[in-house]
Length: 189
Length: 234
Figure 1 (cartoon, each protein chain N blue to C red):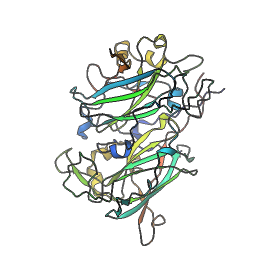
Figure 2: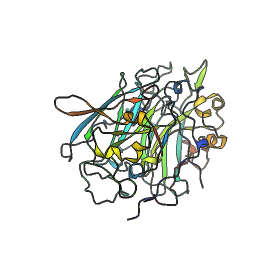
Figure 3: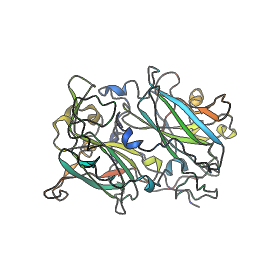
Figure 4: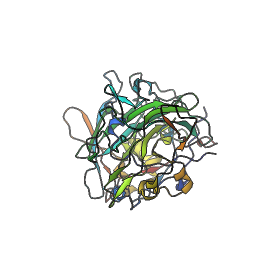
């Protein structure tokens, strides 16, 4: 057996290579589903903005299907949805994605997972990337989702986006807090 | 239908700790809570894989840009992307970025007083082929100072980002060069606890990879997390 290659930090100079094309709009006009915006900030242990982070998102389409050969479920593929996005944070630590709300995807056994967006975070100072998930408020499936239930109740709120009072688009706010009272839950899988 | 098999968990000594105080930037950025351990689902076993349209002509050759040839020592960097079972991983996306021969990145926040090279952008992108192989032609990057501690210098390195078959295999790392005296002083390299794992981050000079009269050659293989033998429990 070969041993896995070790992780090293992405450092501060990745943007020309990794963000050559804009990748924070996941939805061409024809994509099925409810259009949403995910907006948030990345904050460090001093609650200062992290201006040099990169966030990757991976999600199922509106019917709960991933565009991947190992997802061969009955749910429909959407030819207009890949499900992958990338964004860098700006000087205020802010990032933003335009996407659709994902459908519920299967978990273990016959159980459905609550709708979620998978997040991978990279930044100078992170020797290993971090994994978290964005869940949505008011979803009945949140009460039975295996991953949410694995998290202490006092920290679960860090995984649930907040619906902003925005006149036109549905905007979900999701901050990624690296340290401190509201430190975001990160997963090991 | 049988659910797909999850990926093996990585041994702790293979990767750096999250908090490594010698690397100053980790102090305010590394999460302090333990990670919450969970079982993989379809969300982690799947991942983006349709990269072909993001590749441009010339993405594997970093030695020409803006109508001219980059300065510095030309090198071939080649190798294979493998799973832990040593089988090739085809179609992996490999993205690289690096400093120029003088140790300067073409990036607005790089303030190092070394010249930019108008003919070197320092970025590349390819997919591994059916044998898991990849090959870049580039310039050997220079070392450069950084603010981590007094007289801190990064060893020569190339940044690599890889996507394997699933989200669980995502890897961002750095490739170093053999016999670099700065490796002993570099907290990012030294953050990997296991010496053998650190050694695997160092490319191997390979005379068979060189292009006679043109470029030196280095070999560097990647190993991404492999599958568990048993499928996910239903």
